[in-house]
Length: 157
Figure 1 (spheres, one colour):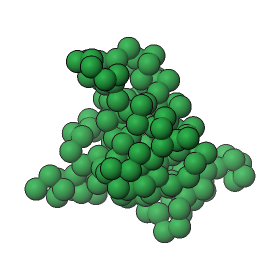
Figure 2: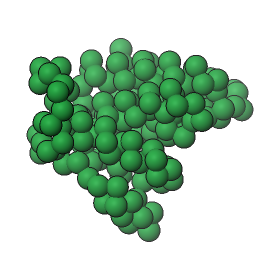
Figure 3: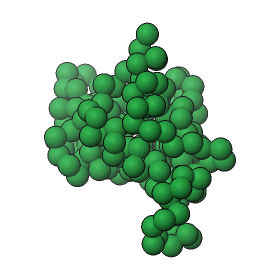
């Protein structure tokens, strides 16, 4: 089940001294894509830090992909973040608070969050078919880059 696979995707093999971020970009890309598929098929992950099927388990993988030099890997990281955001909303920001993400990545995240949140005004202006748009959890709110940065600063205190 997902509780077995998810922790393996977000970690390096036991006994290795390689960091997740140092893995080959293709490995990171594949892990992010598989994780996004697992989360989208299995629903809301737990927010408990010790839960095997939990959003906190995915944070190392998410950060490694969002900070990767390869654009394709960063895109997969943004998609994984959007998949999680649809299910847990702003709780995701708390998990990413100490990630020190570059501003261009934060902008990409906010843009994608706006696209997956049907409550965001910009989400209704595009030509995308309503039936194919991912649905957001009730009450989700897309935040601005400045709000995101302010929340990150507050959580680091």
